[in-house]
Amino acid sequence: MQKHNKQWGSTSDSGFTLIEVATVMVIVGLILGTGVMMSGSLISGAHSKDVSKLAADLIIASSNFKERYGYLPGDLPDAANDISGIAAADACNYDRTTDTVAGNGLIENNTATGGKSSEMACAPVHLTNAGFIKGDGSTIRTDFGSVFLMDRATAEALGTNALVAIDDSIRNVIVFYNLPRNVVLALDEMFDDGVISSTTGKAIASDSSVDTAIVPFFAIPL
Image 1 (spheres, rainbow, N blue to C red):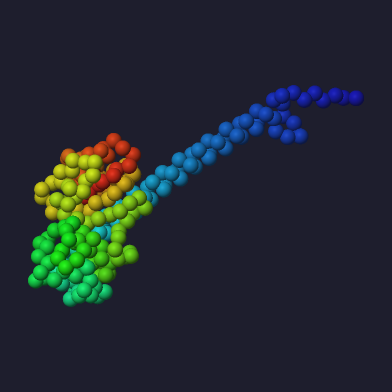
Image 2: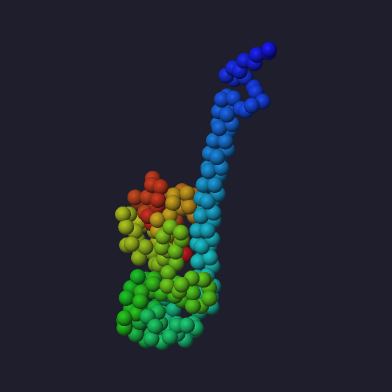
């Protein structure tokens, strides 16, 4: 009778050896690890594109709004006369004769007379009702946080945990809150010099965010 001796590491018709199983597990682990990294990179890239597109859309929408009405969104006097969906009594309709904050070219964080909302709060209302952007008509957001259109002085004052000093040549900005660093870098490369900084360039990050994973405050020129 012929005897068959099975030894570790030898091949057999009955199944895989430990060495073969270990090799397969290592290969599967490498494939899964690469897939996870690629998936994370794709998601990160998609977020960067979404935020950059929103920034570009807001700049174009604001420019087109000004071309149509002669004023920036939020800064338009007597909006009820021009924009469907905004009534005379609305908080975002400024009376040209009494609400002197409107029409000066700045999207200010003020409270106009007669219980009106601030121009900063009214900017998305004007843009949405005029059909330049889509949304709920009161807020603009990314997947990470709020987005506001505002004047330079307001942005400097609202730059919490920061010593924000925006270039004096810039009158208004778009401010993004709580963006991941890689998304901010993509924005800075698109609209400035590709360097996240609180002191240089025309796109400004909050001072505390230069070396952090999340940038609390980032402003680009409008």
